[in-house]
Length: 450
Ligand SMILES: Cc1cc2nc3c(=O)[nH]c(=O)nc-3n(C[C@H](O)[C@H](O)[C@H](O)COP(=O)(O)OP(=O)(O)OC[C@H]3O[C@@H](n4cnc5c(N)ncnc54)[C@H](O)[C@@H]3O)c2cc1C
Image (tube, rainbow, N blue to C red; front, side, top):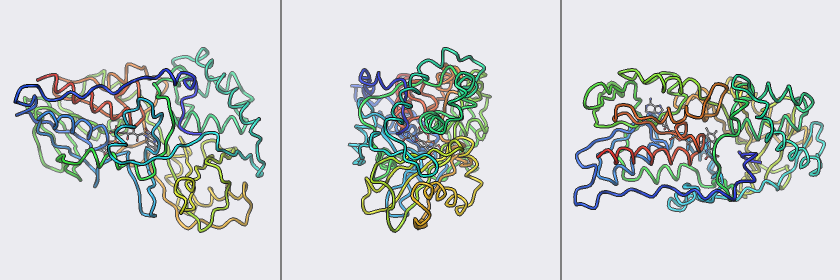
């Protein structure tokens, strides 16, 4: 159980994608970027990757970041003594994934998460047999492989699925699969494209969860870079020779700018572009979807749950605290579970108090483990949809999205205005590796211009 790509599971072995080789400074004495300046907007993994590569190639680089620390959606909360990753947690497929090497370089530690180490509960605390679970899972993969044949540009995944499989639409186990396998990976089923729900490439190999914090990579990349924190960019004026960037009532100039703010921020028009962005880019900003996944970490004095990695629960309400990662498996000294809320229910959690959240999560746990289980000692939670630095979790193929929209989001404007970020990577959108590769891609474009 993980953010998984369903149909492509069988193809994973074929993935031999390698990171594009680093482009170093020219062989001559003068580095390619000397005397050229670049401002990178956003210190997430894409912005930091771009900044590092450009600085290594002699450019004068400044990163402007709205938050108090680097990392963006690689954000780790250590207030409870363990690393709780509020954004990315997993390296999705270690084979050929650039994050694998980067993790090693940065001393980021990880733990193999095994989909087969799991137990599934139905409501009433009824344990579901592995055979029933596996059979339904296989059946779902078959459905997913075929469903797009019935899809159309204007219909959502939910509309087509419900029309074809009305019985499964109300089956708690299928609702759980749709939620934790598909909505988690993509977005709201009623907005997800019925044609493009399986787009995006995957890496083979293990799924590994990070144990000392995904921000380890961000801090590693930021080392030696000039990053100005607490600087919110509000305007990018690329109408003159030098690009003028307004941040906190200051105007900074550079030869090039790379905008790496999340798609959610672009959708909110928080940054004014002068002149306006080309229509193709504006259309892409509108059409590609931005989803909502929220994460919750709870701790207890004692562990009362099963000694497996994943515990799934299949409530009537879709997308609601339906699976639990047993954090104790990789932090043995801590009794903690991590759970999730997606899509509309995920957004709804953002208006709920901590006590309400605990009550709802405990209702599921009590149904599985009895009314006498202890109350949690702590709760950590995210509110990605209302977070002004992202306005959502990651991009997905909504109804109306075309795959070329991802390339439109990456398109350079006037050889001065560049765009990186997970949402600009047609092959690996939504993931940390996609964001990282996009930063390197934009740095190379600027290097190639010299
Ligand atoms: C809940 C969740 C779970 C995830 N799980 C995984 C996972 O397990 N594995 C995986 O590979 N990926 C996962 N991802 C996706 C991954 O975290 C992202 O794809 C990746 O971190 C995005 O990097 P980025 O550089 O594109 O954007 P960001 O990291 O968002 O960086 C953009 C930066 O821009 C800054 N910014 C925003 N507005 C402004 C402004 N106006 N001025 C200046 N700065 C600004 C932001 O503060 C941020 O630091 C997850 C994401 C979330 C939210």
